[in-house]
Structure formats: C-alpha cells, structure tokens
Length: 298
Image (cartoon, rainbow, N blue to C red):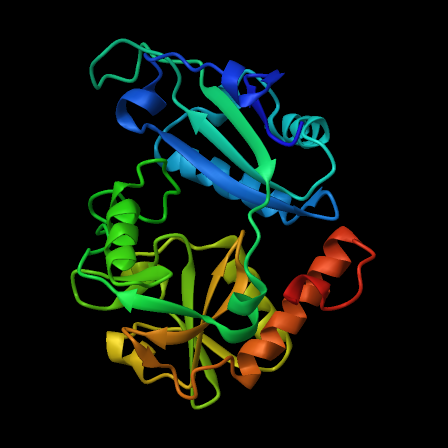
C-alpha cells in the first residue's frame, strides 16, 4: 500500500480512483493544487501549503469552504493508509462537476483529490555536485493572463518548458518573462549568489512564491545573509558566483551549469552549502525525524 488516492474522502488504490469527466478540473484545468512531502512520516510545512492552496482557490473564486471533506485530516488519513515510506502528497481542489460551458454558477461542490505516493529520490550526486539548467525559449505566462502566483493545475506552460530543457539535455528549464527577466524553473524557484548577496526574482516578474523559497529567504536573513528579491537578467545567472533551485520535492538543489557553462567553479558554493545545512536543521526541528544531522543531504 505505497500509493493511495483519496477522492472526496473515498480512499483506495490508484486504479479504483474516479473523477467525473464533467469535472471542471478535467474539462478546463479549473483547479488548484499543492505538493507536500513528508520527513519522518510527517508532512513538512503543511500549514503553509494549505494556506497557499486556499489563496490560489480564492484567486480563481473556487469556494474552498464548500469542499465536501476537511482537507487537512484527509491528508493525514491518506498518508497513514499509504504505508511507512516517505511520501509526496499532491492535493488537488477543483471547482467540481458542471455542464459544458464557461459559466461556473451551476458547478460544484468542489472536488478534493489527495494522492500519496513514495517520495521520488534525488540522486546523491545531484545534491553533492549540482544539476544542469538551461534558459529556454518558452516564455513564462504573464501575470495578466494566467498569473503564475496561482498554483493552478494548468501546467502546459511548464510542460513545454520542461520538454525544451530535455531536448537541451538539462535537468530543469529556466523561464524568462516577456521583458527577458529571469522568473523560475518548471517546478522550482531560482536563487543566485553574487558578491555574497543572495538574490531571487520578485513576484512582480511572474513567479509562484514557493513555500521552500520563502523558508530559504527566512533562513538566510536570520543567519545574517544579505537576501533580496530583485529583477535579474539571464546573464545574472550565467555569471553568478553560485546558484541553486528550491522546491518541495527538491529541497535546495545546487546548479552546476547553465546553458552548458559552469556556474563559477561548477560546484556548490559556501553560501549554498550553508543554506542546505540550515534547511536540514529546520527539517529536524519541524518533523523531529530523529535522523542524524545532514542525512537528507547525502
């Protein structure tokens, strides 16, 4: 029982899960979602993820409070039913069933899908040595179309960027906005280090404010680092002293090369390593895993 899906409180294996073909999430991508992971069997930063799920729903005017189940206890129930291994949990909230057409009024109540699966492992070499990224020619959605601040299930923009990165042999694409400023990866936020300053693109340039991104900014500032949200050009990444990605399932993942060229010395720098250690310490505090310090960084 390593993978379980909960649809409106009905738990079972993936092959028995069922969502109506008239569900707006299926028809229009009219849904929002969160990805959460466990450490020591406990969901990490669950409150922050659920707060963002509610914000995303409100921005799309999906009535979060009309969901047929209480989402937080259903997450815990699904994790428990899925067995003891570390889990990646995807929580999807759709507008629910309705007739064909754009009018949302006849729709609902919302549909809640909670999918718990084994957490994908990041190869130790990626953590130790870093990964390759590429600045791709797929532009990030502008905020005036589908605002990237909404964590919606419409991920075609991200998918096309990911495909472009695969063709270039890169692990993760980096998208620019229409003004050719850095935004984020297909499934990650981006940080660079320049002259001992930690920099990350601001929300105004078209990003999703990642939960891990927010934690890294908090940890950096508490540790006395100069950490700022600033607009950045692509060359700010290519010529950075250090760079890394952040995401729920990736944690902090160093970048070693961009567009085939090494970032500085082509290996994780001191600020990146320091933040990785601080992140590991926060995981220990939040989840009380009991594992040896640094064990999730190997």
